[in-house]
Length: 241
Image (tube, rainbow, N blue to C red):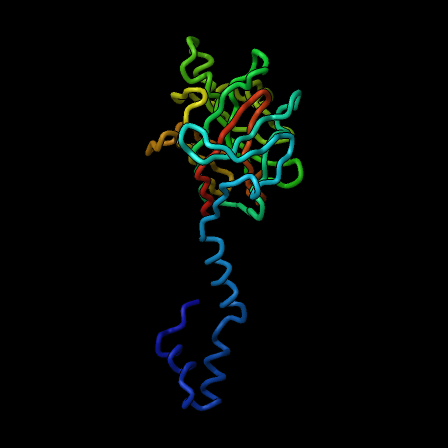
């Protein structure tokens, strides 16, 4: 609720009679100040640039310099199952907004033939439940159109991994975008309710659109995410809501 300027001046005017002063105070919502402070906190971007700001799950985390950038390196632990390797941004709480990061992913040295350099971001994480959008860098320039069409992926753990979504809704939660393994890639997702948009390489238009995220309009932590057999790098993370 907006308070007219003259009313605010009366509140601050010590010469005003107590009766008038009290009547104006009654018009102020009890928690108005707390709401403004909370709004300012939520609007302020949250940054995470070092391993010390992360809580690792199913992955190793290290501070490194990669292709000229100060970065965090994530390596999925050997034999880790899909969906269990990520690093939570400490203190993060995310519902709607934008997550931006520069990332690079490539198959680890000892990865199996199915490794694609899976790398991306998880969000609204609570316990073992989260939504995520990731890239398959080795698919971007594959000599196979079907693989190219699977360059990006949306999913939700634990019940909606890529395999289930691909079987139940072929092509709906995947798309093509030009990618190269091990190369820095600008990645941005915009989340609003049950809708998500993925923008890559600073493009003005999304390369992946999701209108029915599986966990609903929820809230939770943000995490850097890598898939099985992945060596991933993250830099310049910015969370805005």
